[in-house]
Length: 123
Image (cartoon, rainbow, N blue to C red; front, side, top):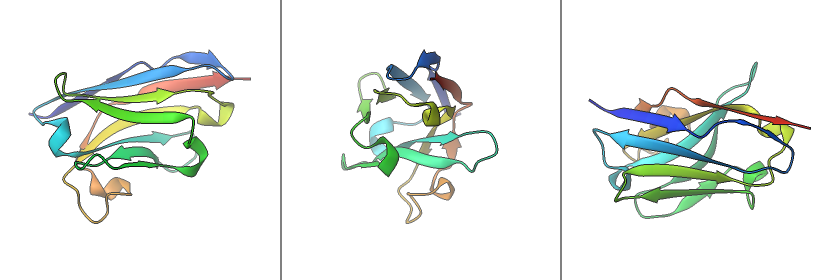
């Protein structure tokens, strides 16, 4: 049974930092495309960042230079370091794992999902 368990969400002020974690079981993070998505109220779910099996990383334009995705194979855990947070980063953040389909830039490319962790940034 695959489980992805996110943690680290919190309420912070503008300019603050958070590190999200996604502990995986039932799969190996290094052999899957791993991604962070977010969904704000009334908006569609969007990819924030992805790390492929070859180590290539992708970031959504609005988070480039502020967010860093990484994985720890020994802990089988995915991370998202978020710096210089802005109110528009407020959302539920989800960890996802996929097999590297052609649709890896969209939510349809991911078969396993966590339950989400809330990030709230106040001005």
